[in-house]
Image (cartoon, rainbow, N blue to C red; front, side, top):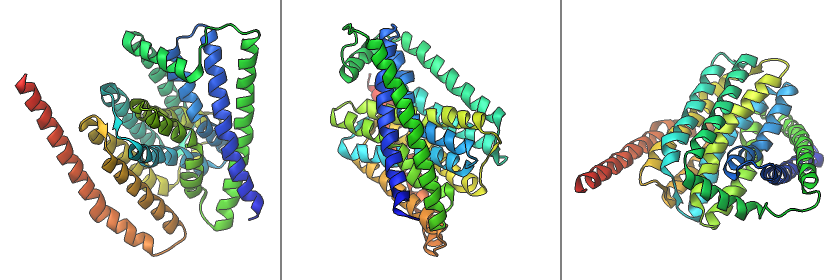
Length: 369
């Protein structure tokens, strides 16, 4: 392992973040010029943009036969999105959660997690599995577009948010479409080059440290490709747009599972192998994290600072377990027993109590009316 390994990693992450930013801006402005409603742009183009690094890295890894890296990137990103990014964002400011998110998007995120786990249960994700997942993102996007068109208020809000984020698109500039098209091309080039750098650096680092590609994908690569989501959520929290911070994470997780893994399985020359370790530990953790969102989001429709701190503590424990277990340290067994025997059961009981109190409070409010 040389200094160039770290240069590849840093350069890859930087190019992925820059590429996603350029791609989103170019595609969103071009779509607006073509008369596509801003809300639809936000649900499709912007959602793709924040998950573009995951897409580029996982597809590149799948084509090169590094299935563990492709799987680890998606699963690790979904875990990091909730535990790390929402945890950090909630520490900045308590996050509001919309009712639509709880009733629609979080259950879909849970369903997508369970579907992916079921398809991967045989140890592989083949082209049929990829087609099923990719069909899911098409259906989800089509439903969101139909659903959003029925809500005039949401459309108005989306228009305002789009204007703030991308500026006034009504002004006509000479050759504006050519400039925006050029931004899209530049963004795609940056994503391709960045994904090549990051995959190459991650594989070299894994081999040099004697750590599996799965662990590198679940940690270094997952956090690196989640930087656009981190920047978006933190910026939204600082601006007071706290519902956007949560929606960004949930939407990205759905997109990662259905589109990124689906597309990766479709373009891979051979079925993507899913390791036994991922099926036994990492997939269940991802599903557990998704399930934990529902009661926490439901209780008061808000993520408080102490809940954000709890998310962060879990992510630190999860990462520590991955690193210690991959290096063969005995501490990993102790940590695993502590998590399974004490921390997780206590958290589950706490979540049940929180939901019970929230349900009782709502019932009392209904009776008072």
